[in-house]
Amino acid sequence: MLSKKIAIIDYKMGNLHSVFNAFQYLKIPVEFTHEKEKILNCAGIVLPGVGAFGDAMKNLQYLGLVDLIKQEISSKKPYLGICLGLQLLFEQSEECRGKRGLNIFKGKVVRFRSKGIKVPHIGWNQLCLKKKSELFKGIQQGSYFYFVHSYYVAPEDKNIIATTTEYGEEFVSSISLDRVFGVQFHPEKSQDKGMEMIKNFARICLNTRRSVPAKL
Image 1 (cartoon, rainbow, N blue to C red):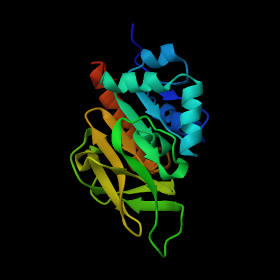
Image 2: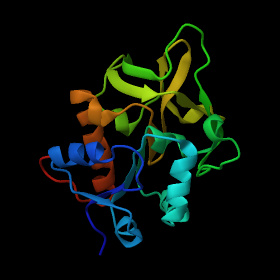
Image 3: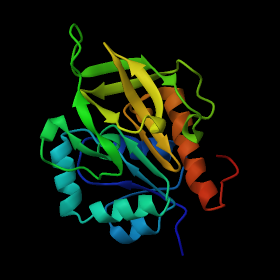
């Protein structure tokens, strides 16, 4: 029997517990795991992470999770990538040339190049909503979210871009396609708007299973 829990994948990249704690604070059923059986049986997947692109792929490969994640995304299970978890959806990154990502989307991860800005980009910044997405239900145009990153995604397919943000240049700050979502910012550090986004993702997961908690 499938679990009603959402799996946060534990693959030793950054402070993953802050994301887990945000789900727990909202009383969303959640599992912090790298066990394949639990991931297979979950209602949705969250892949957070802070750190190097190459190290992240190495850890996922060591745990035998690369093919599993790709399989689950292909099966239309809801997926939310946060920060590094967004970047890993693409083919490759300038941070680690020659190392392949999950290759869910065509495109690469590039470093900020604009003059006169500090890198990494750290702090609060606004979202420009580019298309309708269930993930952003109730989130207003221009809402602020918290960022910490030196790289951002450059998708070949512009139709997957959900939001952009200005930081010396316009960059892609989130993507959305069917049940696959990725955000460059940290919803778990973004106060009320971030909590609303996490609840939106939980609703997507639990609606897919036709089992939405009354208080969510």
